[in-house]
Image (cartoon, rainbow, N blue to C red; front, side, top):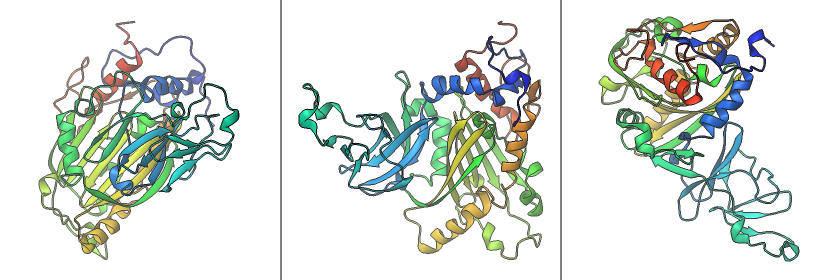
Length: 400
C-alpha cells in the first residue's frame, strides 16, 4: 500500500502547470479527488455508455451495471423499450437485483417483497392496507434515468443540463462509431470478459497510438506495421483513431495465421478506436467488434467489462471467426494487448512520485492543445485533459 505525503486530504485546490503538455501525477492517485470526480463528472452533465441493445435483445432481458458507486438496472420492457433504473428499492433503498444479467418477468426486492414490473412500475407490496394514508403505488416505481441511444449504444446521464447525445458525441465520433459498429449497430452479443485493473480510471483512458508497437510484444512478433490513418478529438474529451491495415508479413510466430485474417471489406479503416469521455472505449480491429464498459470503482481500481459482438447478418462461419479472434487478440490477455494490465499498474505506482506526466510526441505549443495531430501522436489526449481540468475547476499557475 502506497501512502505518499501528497495524498493526504488537501486544503487547497489542485493547481496545474501552465504548460499544456504537463498533467500533475496527483490526479491519478488522490483519493479525496475521486469523490469530487464522482459528483462533478459521473453524476453530472455527462453521458455514460452503459449497454448495447444487442446485450438485451428479448423482452425481460436485464443487465446490472454501476455508474461510479451508483448501482443501475437496465431492462427491456414488454413494449420492447430499454430503460435504466436506479437499482434501489423505493421502499427502504435495498438493492433490487444482484445478478449481472439474465431474464425475468419482473423484479422483486427480497426485503419486504415489493414487486416491480419490467417498466419500473410498483405492482405489488404486501401489507399496503396498513401503509401511510397518502401511500399510492403510482408514486413508488423504480427511479428511471434519462437515456439516449445511438446505433444501439445506450447512454445514461444524471445531469439536468446534459446536451442531446448526438451533440455530445459530435460528428467525428459518430462517423467512427458507425465503422466500429459494423455500419448500422445491429449487433448480437458473443460474450464477456471482465477484469479489474489496479489503476485510476483516467490513466486507463489515457491510452494513445504511440505506445502500441513499442509496448506490445505481439505487434513486434507479427511485424505488424500500421498504415496511414487519422486521429480526431472533440473539445469535450472524446478521441477517435482510424488506421489502415497493411497485410501482415508472416514471421512463423503463429502456427495458424487464420487467427489474424481480415475478412472486412475496407482495409483503409481496418482499425478504429473510440475513447468516449470519461471512460468508455470501443474498438474495431480486424474483424473484432469490442465494446469496453468501464467502471471507476475507486481512485486506484478500474473495472472493465469487455463485450464482444458479431453482426446480426453474419453467417455461422463469420460468427466463429469473430468469436475466435475477439479475446484472443484484444481481450485482457489477448495476444496484442496482454501487457496493458502490467503497464496500467506501473503507471499507477509511478504516479505516487511528485511532478508531472509529460506528453511529448506531437507537442506543437505550450499553452493550448492542438486538434491537428497525427495518428500516432500521444498529444491527442491533451484536449481531453484540458476539458477535464476545466470541468473540475482546476486553475493553471498563471490563473491562480
